[in-house]
Amino acid sequence: MLHTINFSASVNQSTVSGLISNCFNAINQGALELSIHMSSPGGDLVSGFTAYHFLKSLPIPVHTHNLSNIESIANIIFLAGEKRTGTSGCRFLFHPFHWGLIGTSVDHTRVSEWSASLDSDLERYIDILQAQTNGLKDRDEWKKVISTASIANASTGVEWGMISAIEDAKIPLAPGTYWWVIS
Image (cartoon, rainbow, N blue to C red):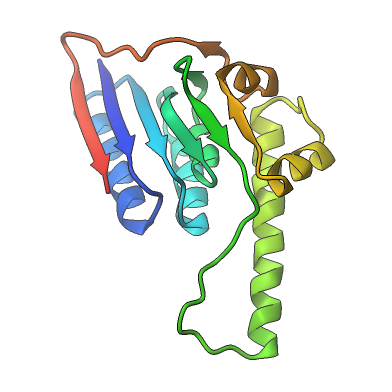
């Protein structure tokens, strides 16, 4: 039976925990396939990488569908789908990584650590982009896409290997089981 998870949320520890919990619940209820309908402004890098690796570890096929916007680290979660599709009006936003540091005092060592961590996250992000899009862009091309805050529409998403097809979301009438993750 197909189970559909609707992920319309920012990426953070709570929403990724909800995604993981819904996946386990679906599998425990006999899901043979998961469809994840997504729209997300992105969010926390650690949570995004966690969600990606979790979805890739599942023993059943995962189909991700871009309902509207997939932005920042949410691109990586989206790329965990074996099958990836998007609506004609969808988009993918790529931009440089950043952390908010409101009210934090730091020393030189901590700033160096954060810089190295952001550099490492960028390399991991590009590794996933290359692997999941079959190397349609090389590392330097992906770095340029990210550093210039690029937006890809559905057609560009196909060209870049983000999605295989442009199609409307499909919600089966019955039988079906539906799950939600919202902010």
